[in-house]
Image (cartoon, rainbow, N blue to C red; front, side, top):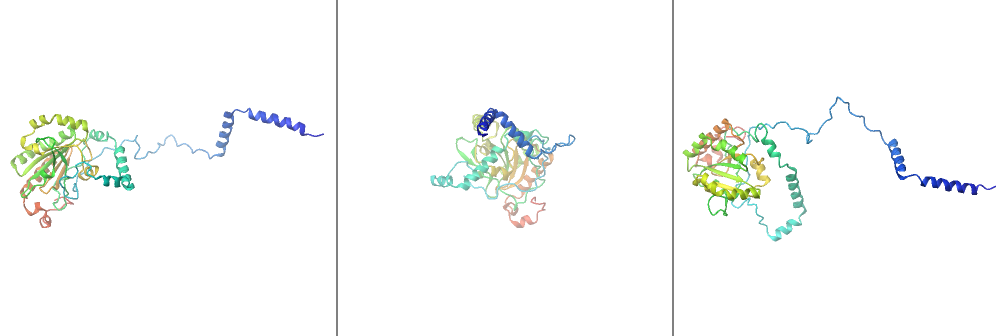
Length: 336
């Protein structure tokens, strides 16, 4: 007797039973099988042991930043030139086309954009709420040596002198012919920064030195406002600024809209857009002293001594920047 007729119905019934298994059940079976064959999960950490965190974890609270004393010169390596840092693209069509097909420049632009988007807009405000109120560094007690000092960059902006639409260069004000003029440059971008600058610029001793040395020492204000809406508001208040600021300072009050690049901010130390900065610039356009944030009594005294020393050296070999004069000055790192 043949068993073929018997086996055929059995096989047919088994296939029907297998086809009736729901797909969810089959997936569950395969999942359980894979869990059994995979490696066991790592053992959980003890309860009394806290999990470690990376330094860049957003949930960790950074320690309070403590500013250190500035012992190195700030500024640009090359002397400023008129027309620099205008923020206007002066490339020709051919140059724009060459840059468009240049892959290396695309990579550089991507890095710059990544750096800009990676910086939080509220980071500056967070540092302002700290104990030091955004102070970036502590001003040096002495001037930077003339042969080690770097240059204040050229910035373009509109002043309070009509016509208002005319753009002027800071280099025309800062670099003066012999015997020269010393400049105390205040840089700010907000009302908070302007109030911080006032703690140094409006000090009685500092104002007295500037007043006593008219024609030798001048005050220069640089109001950087890259936000279009805020810049328009400042423009509306220009008539009010003319009334508040003395007329002899109208040509020395700059409203800068563009051209302050990340490189300039890094080299000059404008790392916090909400903080006010003060620079003592000699007649050659070199930064000889710098302060940030709310001024201390020590910084006020250092600025007064620095202005008087530069006034005494106007037109001398030290102001011109010869190495012979710098050799006789006391040296602490790059500070004279």
